[in-house]
Image (cartoon, rainbow, N blue to C red; front, side, top):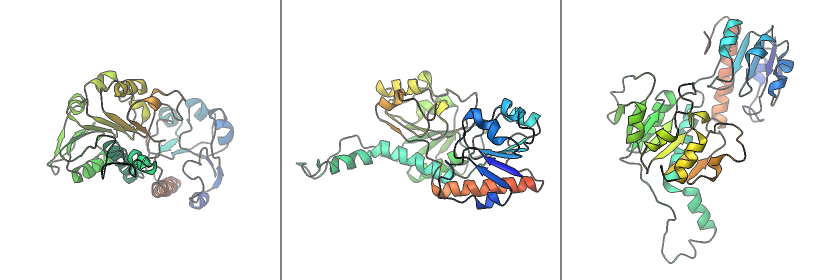
Length: 319
């Protein structure tokens, strides 16, 4: 059985092993694949894996041997799942592998916005503390999280763990999700519709999937309803935020700051307006990418395919 990995470098730049996957078939690994080479490289494959390389309806139609598309991620919007279903091709993703790492990054961004650790460290290394007339100083406002409210858009697996950590910091939680589950074990929690969540939160953290209804959810109007002292975090999907609207909101002091790990286009254009926005921290979509999380991603990927080969369908997204 021929297995083609279209863009394996991001998952495994050399610090993991493909051995377990290679035991399941004849594996061809490409570090990266341009969109116009998908059909050529996947020709004759029964199984293909993709991380961010799009798999279009046209590509699926030109791959008659294809039986299984494995997405090396949780989000699967890069695959035309309807076309795959119509052709009888299974599409499977990998949920849950990066939860702990994404939660960790969420609070790394938030704590940097609150305390400006790196910026203060930079001033110390530049000699400012050694020259200070006082025994300490701070160049930026310092914010304590205890008693503040975090609004979590997408209160699923990741959102709930963000809530757990927020509780440890003494924060109150407002949640929003497509399904409002019982959270009575959380005395500091309430459900709310998004307009109320935005108005009442000191921190807004996005953890919802990218669907047509969430694309552009955070825009000029919604940003305008937030507190001027509020922070916005996004470790989910970039297109949920309108980049220009967020840049304008930051530069005009509509909100106080933003910490984002994702942008609307990745890699971004050099003139993305957020690159020059005030109090904006941007990391290059790395919340998922700890070695531990990537190791789990590899393990679940192999498990998904093994199950499929044994006649079972695991983590299928186009049933």
